[in-house]
Image (cartoon, rainbow, N blue to C red; front, side, top):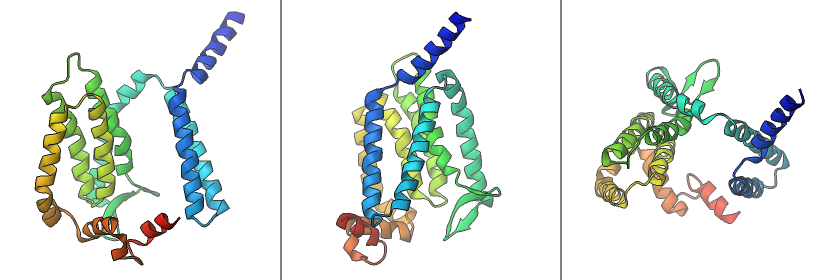
Length: 236
């Protein structure tokens, strides 16, 4: 009985104190900076600040719980989560709710945005595919990673939701980057993107997306419209 209790206490101790405390400190610092900026930008609104603190604390608690899940279970969930996210995004394109010209949500009694699931599913599957390789990663392996990223990116951009698509792409790309993606590949990709930018601008981007990019570069071009919040953020 005493030995069993000792083992349980040891597991709890090991779970609570076997974390990367540098990472936790950096996260808490980012949380604090975020709350301060939000408080300043929202005219010292205490109610909004309390809500921010609550949701950040909730998110941090969920992070601690998820960090304790066995890594084998997380790996096993990678492919099902990815497939589920693609199925849900396909349903969005077919029967999704359209709001302000964008079809990004599913109405299942409550509105859900399946593209949010991709922010988790894409880097998780890319990491899983890389981790099961028993050799130095080849260009073919990186190509598989890019295909995993490109499919949901294209589907999300079709909604259209280029902003979320870029975030999903970045989440997967940085997994490849930290896995050792060769600089030559990144430079060639960057050159390709720059070279194709006129075509992307002319044929792929919607008018509102072009307007947002132009406003980001020069917020004073629309100070009372798209550039308003950027200008207010600079002032704050």
